[in-house]
Length: 226
Ligand code: NI
Image (cartoon, rainbow, N blue to C red; front, side, top):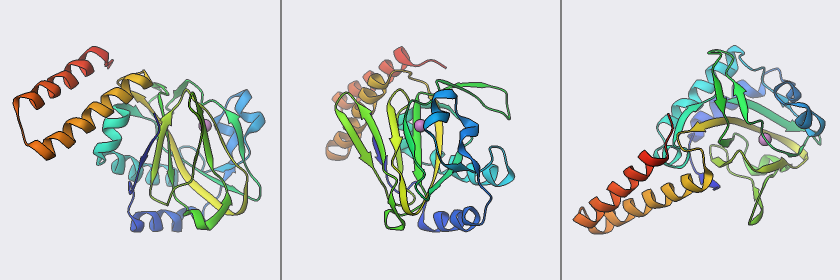
């Protein structure tokens, strides 16, 4: 499932982050990938664990925690500290799959990457190219969102970032281990959750909605691992 979540960060939050990021030092993006990724990855990142990455990452995590839609879509068990990247001057990231397991440096804890997220910090008019393309059974999906918006997609997918030929594309990106490992099951739970909420808004509480709500929670109980 791919899901666009608008307005995860406010315009003010984006502007404050950009003031810091635009003045920051970037390091080679190949530091955080394996051998396959390193061959196709050309971009720069904020050094993992640097004070600025920690500070800005905490703002991103706080914004995620107050997004009911992110919770419903990702069913997050834990999210790794957000990273920040910059593509400019023709930089791109060819087709790759995200590594299945990541070790969180601060805690030493392993995290299985179920859900990948990209939070756009540049507006589409600021740069040419830079589309994120995600490939799934239904074809190729191209994504380029306003600053402050988030795209959530399955970490199992093959995906790429097109070359940025003008301006700079600045984003935050991170991985989440979900309480529900399977993308299809997460997708079904999200659809059920959204349908229940929509019916509740139309009909108010009723016995049938209570039954559907029980089914949502009982499916989650069946499928979740914590
Ligand atoms: Ni990736």
